[in-house]
Image 1: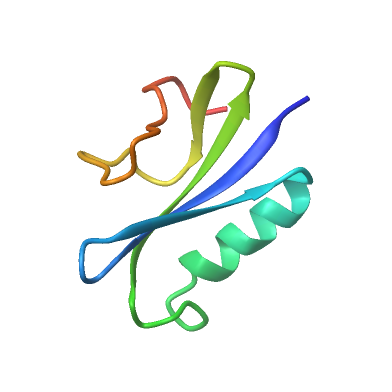
Image 2 (image 1 turned 45 degrees about the vertical axis):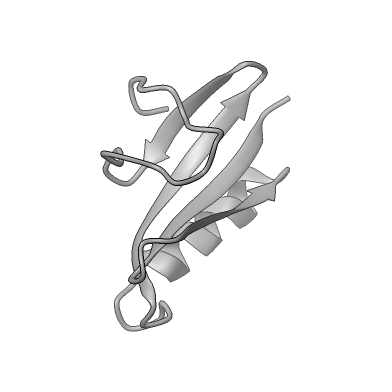
Length: 79
């Protein structure tokens, strides 16, 4: 079973993430946060990450150069 995570980097450099069990809900949230007309002004970048057991894959969005969270996705091909 896959977990979907929405990773967000804010303008102040802080990061956050939200976990989803439903891939479609995660993709919908990613689309909203990626849309410049919809996303909050404080959001700099957003990534959709798929967590499958002990591996994480960047599904959408450019892979970040650095993270301020302890748990970081592995660099893998896009899911």
